[in-house]
Length: 315
Ligand SMILES: O=C(O)c1[nH]c(=O)[nH]c(=O)c1I
Image 1: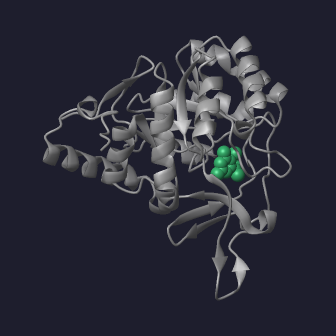
Image 2 (image 1 turned 90 degrees about the vertical axis):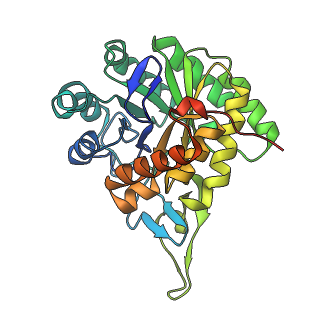
């Protein structure tokens, strides 16, 4: 029985990692992930400069998951670049790969960061995940919901970034949108993977005792994660898996146990990101879910991920 896998020519001991944004903003958080049982990790989406983010409370647990409107708080590109280049190698005891998330506030900013990151990627030190789906920067609509904008971003980044990279997509809810988003992604061979999904944007969770919203920013509107989003996450994983045959899929959304991880892989995910459950449980979640997935595979007679990867059956 092995949970090892190869992704973009890189070896992973197992398919699990954090979702960008969760437990990956500071050096301590990143090092805790580096030394956890995860197969890899990803940095907090960054902007060129340090960013405070939205006023707190900006994250809250909710009955079936979470709501967040963090507002892209991060220590700035240089911090994550230096972490990946200098600090990570010294704490990366299991030699796991690291992904690097970029979420500039403009095409120019994202392109400039991608260009600066490229040397580290050509050295095989990082894998870029370009975030096209942050729902929480006031006044900044999600790039992934504007097909022409997404096309412009991918064209600009592809022209300065010489390595394969991936994109973090928002959830889509209509076949016409699966089709048009996949058509844009399929124009770019350098887009080697697609991460589905980011949080379901601009939900509203209410506390009936206080009759208040749970978070302060945007009148309580924020990205929804956790069990609430599992069916949407699985649908987006499978929709892009079938529409982008030349690309890998990373699944994200609603993974709280080995069962949901199994579903994501069955739907087409090669790697699986954990967000809300990691935020609530801590890095022990990787040990638990690894064990649960192994048990499930054993019960079904599977010995590797490829035994069931992408093999979802329809009726
Ligand atoms: O509010 C955030 O920082 C945030 N929150 C999310 O749920 N997804 C994102 O991509 C981002 I950049």
